[in-house]
View 1 (cartoon, rainbow, N blue to C red):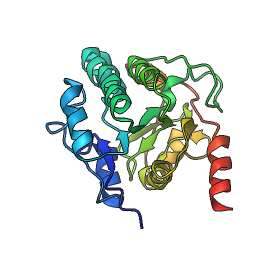
View 2 (view 1 turned 135 degrees about the horizontal axis):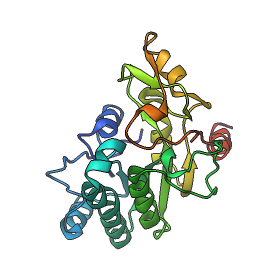
View 3 (view 1 turned 30 degrees about the horizontal axis):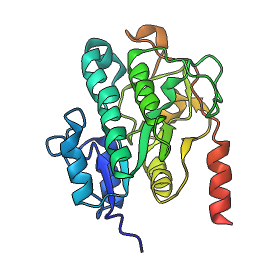
View 4 (view 1 turned 45 degrees about the vertical axis):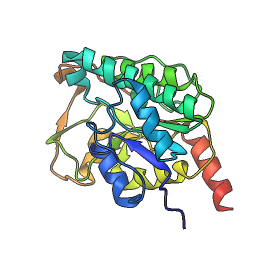
Length: 241
């Protein structure tokens, strides 16, 4: 049985990193203080070499759109420069890089986006994640996972009635990410659930959630960022056959 002891996950104390640690206990999950992605990458490279890391899963990110609007410099350092640093050390150590990105890189005017559809973010958070994607694209031995992950139960009292998405709860996304960590697939791949309104997703775990419209929040929210997941489904079918 694979132990994943040659896997390192950045953002180990964050939401996604904490959940991955539950299913990959032998992998390495350094804290931000131990492995600051936005600092000089040389020390991070030494860590990768000393631990003989073969796959780096880059989860560390500044992920709140309204907070990014107020502190874009933090997103610049973490989401763009930090990701570029991870690309640099993976290039230098011949380590595979898996980058967790977002469905928000799309404009949101049509939905059912494929991996090679044009990208056009509508808020600064998404631009910063796309900046990270640009850095990752410079490295051939890499995989960009576009997704949108929700805690369970739904963490807010209100949910958008006019936004469509492929967002899914964390317990459904984690097994898919683990399968991809254990694969040799590269490029870009979309994972999530079926196209639905955020409001309907929320009601699965919070039946009395209130309705909210995008126009009532103080940051730009794309209308339909649902993801076409044909590549994932085709790949998974081949693995299971």
